[in-house]
Length: 159
Image 1 (cartoon, rainbow, N blue to C red):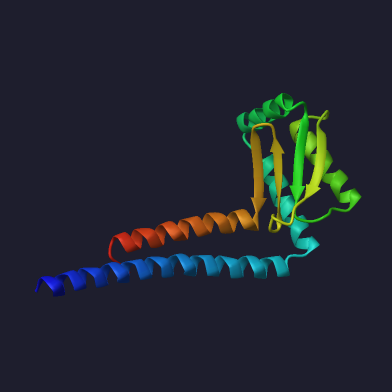
Image 2: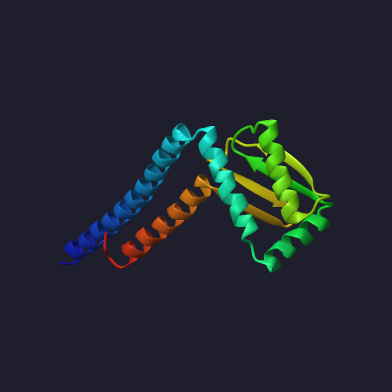
């Protein structure tokens, strides 16, 4: 009876471990496929539209939040780093620079860079602050939420 009980407990542990690993692997695969598909579908028109979404959000920012960013810009010597997933045409870059200067100060020194790590989006970084919006960030958040939900499900015995 003891051997059967130990065997049943061992089998249950193996089953729980198997389902936990399966859930983690499933989440990873779903998001890897999603990232790949979005990267292949994204074009410059989509990227520019996403930048407009971020700029709209900046314009709707609460005055207190805007002041915090302006203070951070001042503390960083007036520089703002803008990282985008693709190269912007010079005219478009100047349009975004104008809008960012209108938001955070005319003396703002902007530095634009590109990063293949970003998935359809933009990051605006200064001293101690970062404002970012991208499909990649959205997927990261969704992945964390889904992983946590699966983990809680496993703890409740829903494997």
